[in-house]
Amino acid sequence: MGDLLLLAVALVWGSSYLAAKTLVVTGGVLVVLALRYLVSTAAMLPLMVRRRPTRRETGVGVLLGCTQASVLVLETYGVSLTSATNAGVLISLTILLTPILECAVRRRWLPGRFFLAAGVATAGVALLVAGPGLRAPSAGDALMLAAAVVRAAHVTLSGRLARQHDTVTLTTLQLVTGTVVFTVAAGPALLPTAASFGATEWLGVLYLALGCSVFAFLVQLWAIRRTSAARASLLLGTEPVWAVLIGVGVGGEHLTVLAIAGIALVLAGTFGGRRVERDHRLLASKARTTAAMSAPL
Image (cartoon, rainbow, N blue to C red; front, side, top):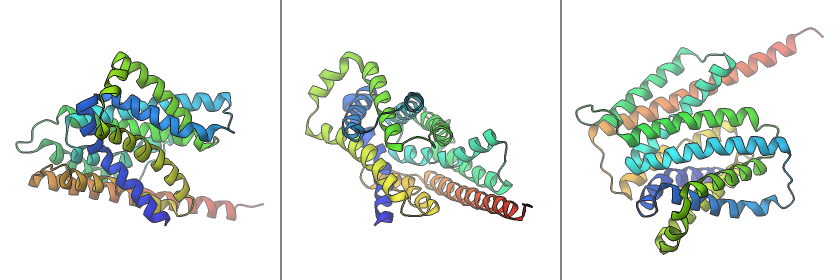
């Protein structure tokens, strides 16, 4: 059951790019983000009835809320200017960028095989975004690459700051922060645009807010405690695969031979790099355990 739910999280995340791309045509990026955050926050606030965040938790939540908002604004502007397929594949580079940032912070470098996998993924990106004639990446592709970098920084920062705090509290604080940021950014256009939305647009907002944010977070929190981290990572890592399938099958996007080759290289490099990083982390953990057991008392 837990595996199926994690796969469902990957599916809704993979579909979020096409959903966002469709919705921003009508509402605009800032209005869509403001509504997404408002609905998500309204859904999460009841969970805070018996929780009282400390001053430190509030500070961490606001900081992570700002970085999370930065990721979403880059992603949403990016997907509005490129294909949902490209967006879903490019954001998967976060999987490679995160351990690189963590190693830079800790000054512990990964094996050369990891950087070989990163090179394969980078070659795939070049093929995916360049297309015939190997032109420069589009503005949307560049924004998605920037989103992958900022998301990696957000994940790294979360790992360092969030360990000692309640997950639900921090997530709600992040959502409240994003709600304030995007409500102010959307400005006077928010209410008239929201009032002009029909049933289709509101279903899109609810899907992004309740499906891709609240449902995904709660299910991930529940399921990851009932399976191994490696298994959860593998299942959630299918997000770009779903983005490609939905972009082509539902969105009617077309892939060139070079784009297909690029997608294959990105996915191969990403999954290969993840495996190298996981194995390296497990070996380091075993080495530390062995050293601790053999140390004199």
